[in-house]
Image (tube, rainbow, N blue to C red; front, side, top):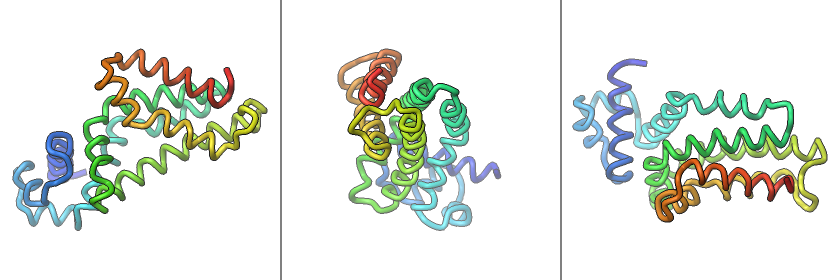
Length: 190
């Protein structure tokens, strides 16, 4: 990846975390120290820029391989728990950007696309975990894998994480522990 592209991605990430998503490509150019034309050479639109920012954050952090390793655990319940821990640790790191995207997704189709892309991938991971629980006979009776995945996704959403850690002052470690236990109990009854 070119150094200019990385500068633009870093600038956009800083702007999102600091100001929300109400900025222009010209603002990104100023923040990154490149011309507006350079921004448009790398990103044809705000939507493509937002998508690139969130995917770059994922790639830089290595969240995808950690989630894949978690889901590969031999025991389905431990796979779910490991996936939850990987996601919640990442949610803590991405909270400023994720909260800004979440806040503006209903009014800004560019941010909505980036948000939905990342949430679809996360929900797919939860679905893989809940399908394994069902295949092993461990999914709580009355739940199907799709509903269970939706419940896990909602119970560990960025707003829930933010309410526990920011609004209520719970430590990230305690929030991770309690949410992991709560989701596991809700889905597998353990």
